[in-house]
Length: 312
Image 1 (cartoon, rainbow, N blue to C red):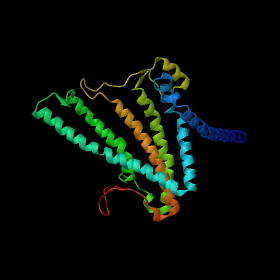
Image 2: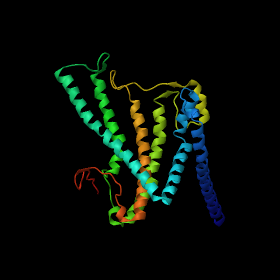
Image 3: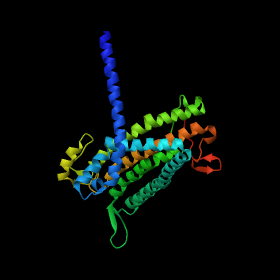
Image 4: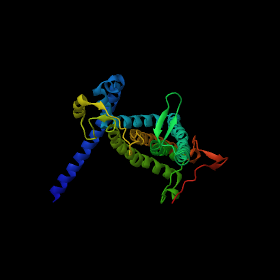
């Protein structure tokens, strides 16, 4: 029995060592992969070449790409720990990106309401089967096309305003421990949450949504389990096949945009996880005086926050 336990323990340590070595090897290779991608852009950006397009589709959801992004995060974090002003600059830049996108695409909610009013008027009052815009060569679609397009506005609000709402503190929180602990403990919880919840979740959804998107843009179909060698062979048959089929004969014909928005959502979540980790670290290091430092929050009036998030 003792021998069996010793063997099992040895195998566990060996597996752990192999895992650590694999991670360190990928981090080291990330520098080479990033350098090669920068110095050979035609190998993955020249979409006139089917091989380059297929490489782009593969590497966008690959282990190699993840470690390039993760290693970049590690390098920027190390520089920021050495020079805190640099880290504050990255936090402000990423939060500015989230706020700008959110404040811009939040107007899609208003467009959705106005378009719905126009649809009702055209159907019930003018009894028109279509709506036409423009001069000379008008842009004309069936009423059902505009009705289905309303879902696109909703998707834009969800995908592009989610990180904005996070920055503004507008998400609902289930709080069992957080409010009862000290300030620096809260910041540690925030840092751990960024690393073990936000980043892995964004990475996992990105990997599958990336290939889900490409399956609606090109043929032959590709999947997350395909190896690069297989995709390079498929490149000989590669053709653009952008999804244009709606749920009704005359319905909205650009559903591929929804797949692109899912990928954009995952990327924004990962970037915000980086910003949240850095902000939490800086506030932990500098103390309570730095809480909310440089945070650009919307207000209705002086001292009144636009969002009153719920905590349970």
